[in-house]
Figure (cartoon, rainbow, N blue to C red):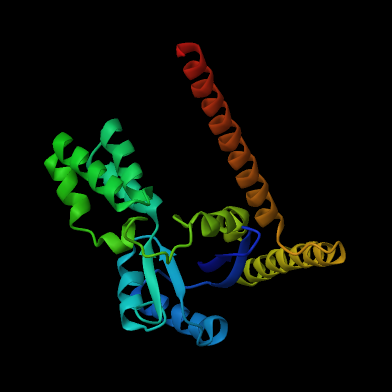
Length: 238
């Protein structure tokens, strides 16, 4: 089963499309992406596709247009890059450094981590360095990921549908459709409730704003306390 999912404004999984195919090949991925472009994306620009490093999918993306510059972007799931790296270099220190390099947003800090990897193991450094940095690093991403680093959203749907895969095809399709519709019904009810309460932004946005406000308050108090300490020290010196 091939699945396409997105994240809504409330940071919740939003199922977009699914299909059952014989295997994961270039032709099946190309067909799926073509239908996804035609019926879901529908000419929208700025769409970023994040997936594992599957050869058939990579080739299908290259032959399309919606997920390549200037229309969109294609990025690798950092968890899959990290897992692939770990199969070649079974070292706890290197494994942690790889994830730090993957998820680091500042280029300066990313380069520093890569230098540290090089000092530990030159082969591990070369393994990562040969991968296009735009595809696997947050620091060279250019903002396309919008904070989404992995394909966990699709894996979440996979987990929900896992038990249904042993059923006949018609039953799999029906169960998948019913559960997907339930997703939309639940989100619609919550959206209506937010509008009815005069809520301007999603719950997630409010939570982030509250967290940011708390952190800023803590910083302000900390700064004020430090200023008072300096003033008190100066008074005692005088």
